[in-house]
Amino acid sequence: MLGELAPAADAAANRPPATFFTINDVLAKLDRQRGRGPGAIRTAAIAPTNTATDALPASKPLPPAGPEPFGLFTFRAPENGLWRKWRNLESDLAREQAVLTQCRANADTCPSHAVQFLRLIGTVKLKSGRDRLDEANRAVNQAIRYMSDFAQHGEADRWTAPLATFATGKGDCEDYAIAKYVALSEAGFPREDLRLVLGRDRAILQDHAVLAARFEGRWLILDSRKSDVTDDSNSATFTPMFALDQRGVQLFAAPYARLPGSDLEAAPAAADAGDADWTGSDAIGGSGALPGSRPLLM
Image (tube, rainbow, N blue to C red; front, side, top):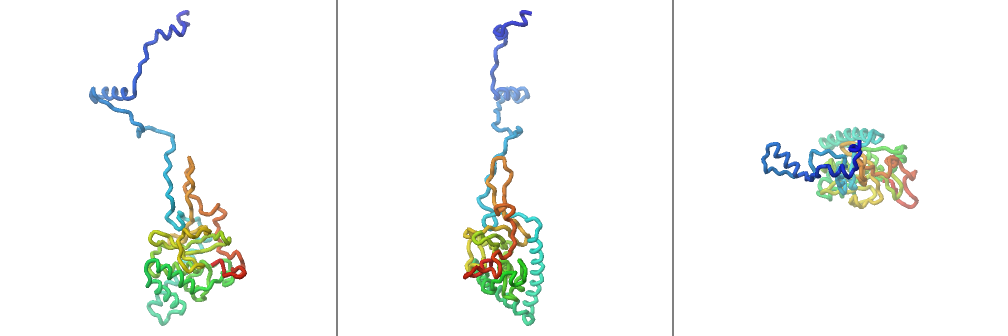
């Protein structure tokens, strides 16, 4: 009984001496036991690939800018009214394409407004480089007189194909952008480098539509309010929300500021989901003009 309750000092005195070793010594000993030779030496890896860990992987840096207009990204927008408008417009464009084809084959039966649009396309096609964009922007801006959809059609927002717009000589911002989109495509500009952009002009709190064209790696803006084509970086008060092209309706998104542990990489370009609602209607009302000024929603 006394032996079982021996003081701790006596028990420590009876213990074998401590043995010290390094991990490299242990690995070398295991290698020798496995027949790799008496001189086998293997060092421990700093970060062995077969070791499991719950540590978060290092975050990949986001690119400084996206490949779409305004340095943003896009992804497919959910089905909404814009998809219906775009599909209806594509049907109208297909019908007008048949008219243009017939006019090219027989000019004698071509309606005057189609002749006018084909003449505009021919003028644009004669230009090269950025001059082609400048010509399309100026020619369409001069050919169409601004009129809101409510004043012309009695409804808040209607998208009109170019021949229908040229038949009346009137239209609003979407109609200008659509006519430029088709004119440049018909003149040989790559359609994959064109975007109809719908957004919000924060300076006047109105929806607005423009055409974006990619030229030499840069996105340029063709605006019905401006005679000159401008760089997208100069549109400081314009918030883009939707891009429309041969892929359909795309929603603009900006990179998130990456936070530790966050898996999110993109956020809507609008301030919040409620802002991503493009109506295309004239917020001012009536003709769309402020007293003593030209129309702003163009």
